[in-house]
Image (tube, rainbow, N blue to C red; front, side, top):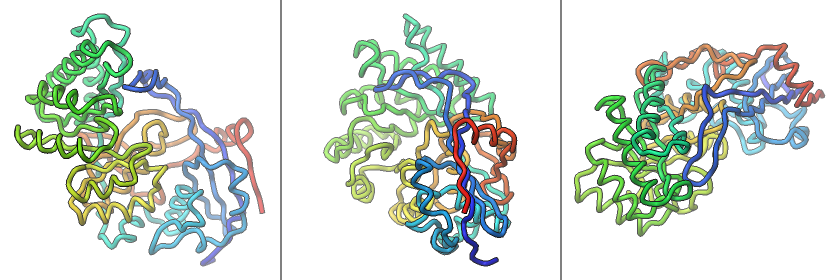
Length: 379
C-alpha cells in the first residue's frame, strides 16, 4: 500500500537511568539519575510500525489518527508541518517501510550521498557540578578528573565540562578558581588530544569568560558554550580578544530560549557553533538549517540533554550536515528500549544501518508502560 492511513497510536513512558547522579550546573540544581522517555508507536493500515520520542500530550495526537502518510511525511522534505507532533515516530516509520536507516533518508532530503556505514563524533556530557560536597578545590578537581577517566574508559574522546560554579553555588572567586582547576585536572587526566568543551549555562560575564579562558589557555579549550546571555556586542568583544591571543576556542550557543537573532550573528561570524535542541527544533528543520549553516561555514551540534532518545536521533544528522561537529551523549539505559546497535569507540558512535533509528522495543516492557503511564488510540 503506497499511502496508508495511520490507524493506531500507542503512547507510553519508559524510565531511563544514568550510570550516576548528574549534579548541578551554573543555574540549576541536581539533575538526578532518572530520565523519563515518552514514546509513541504508530501503526499503518498495512501493518507497518515505527516509534520514537514524542513530547506531545496524547490528547493532541488524536486528530492525526486516520491521516494519510503522505500528509505527514514526504521523502523529499521530511516530516510535514502537519506531522511535526509525531516527528520521530514518523522518521522511524519511514525507515521501517523503506528498509533504510534514517541517516540515509535524511541525506537524501538535502541531496547528499550517504555513507554505507556511519560513525558520528560524540562527546561525554556527564561532567556536571558533582563536586559541590567537597570543601577543597584540589579534591574537587581530582573528583571530576576521575569521572572524565570513566568516560574515557567508555570510549569517549571529547568531554564537556560544566563551569560557572561561582554564579550561584559557590562564592564567585572560589567557584571560578574551582572551574579553572577542574579544567586543568581533566586535561591532565584525558591527555593532550581530547577536545575539552566548556558550558557556562550563562553563568559567566564577559570578563569572567576571558579570565577562565586565559587561565586555561594551555588546555586547548575547543569551545565555550553559553558563556553569557546572547549579546552581539559581547560576542564581538570575546571574538576579538580570542583572536588577539591566538586562542582557537569557538563560541557555541543556541540551546534553550535562544535569541531570534542568533542565526544572523552566526552568519556574521560572531557565533561558531549552533546548538538548537534536537527536539525543540526537530530533525527535519535541523536538516534544512544544517544545509544553511554549511553554506555559511558555521558548525552544527544539536543539544538534547535529558531526553535519552536524542543520543540516537542526533547521530543520523551526521550523514546529512557537512559541518556536523558532535553528538551530545547523555549516557543512560532504559529497560524496554534495545539500543544495542549503537556503540562508542574512540570518540565515535557506531550507528546501526538497520531500518529507521535502529532501535527496538521489548514488547512486554512497552505494554507495561502503556498500562501504567500511557494510552492507546485505534481507528
